Image 1 (cartoon, rainbow, N blue to C red):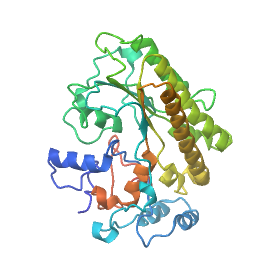
Image 2: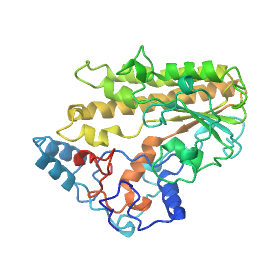
Image 3: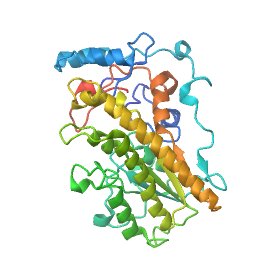
Image 4: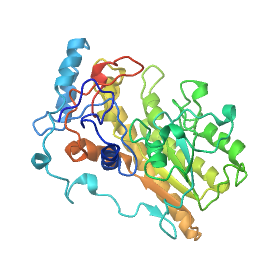
Length: 372
């Protein structure tokens, strides 16, 4: 079924969906994280050009509106499930370790009653606890919804009981990992360091304010950083940086700074790595500044993800050697994204070329819309 062009909802291909239907699609597409709809394209059809050929072809465009139209014509016509099949055990996307966390037991999500999220615009809900004070961690605007939320909102409102779970979000648009490695574009965006300071000032010592009352055995701390760092590291106008060295420093800084939460009493942690940023239109469209950084953004993302997982594993071993029962979890968002990109039909996506959306009453550049 085609997507309704008039809809701003990426799940609008379902005609007059029920709430149950929307939740089923959300569960399928998100799994543990959520449906993060970004402005990207993908070479999914078996008849499409391979990736390098596509990049060379796109580089010949002049950036005009007609070029954007040509780009959108390359969006794949998605196949039926029986034409594509399903991933099998030989698929590289499924070759992940079964055990992605360490500790004496299995993390108990249903018994979790507090969740703190740190990150950037991918995660933010624009909370400002210094300005507005510490609330009770319940957000009625997310209650009984199944669409149009950030991934962490789904964890709170769909994949848990929002009557029970208290959700605090420190993420800020434009935030980077650390000032001394890559500063944010504007000081107000802040860094992971400033978010940690806000948490320490307002939510510690444990158990924090009476209305929060968090403890080591009922609270999850989620960390998702790196998007802005990758982009700024590869910008020509501020000077390109050494990718292997800088990406390694960033990834290890994420884990080292998270250990500060450990000293404050936190014992359950979830790290997310970066999605395949090189597949987004920003790094493919000739009219976008990122086209000249396509190969660099892929390299930096790959190095960051590899080093982040290594640093997380090292921390697991460090705690295990001390018989520490902390839960250190790692979610491979990169593989999850890639699976959706390679097998979109399995997630109920039937059309991407005609998808449109409205932001603040306006239609963005259609070349940046669609499915990646």
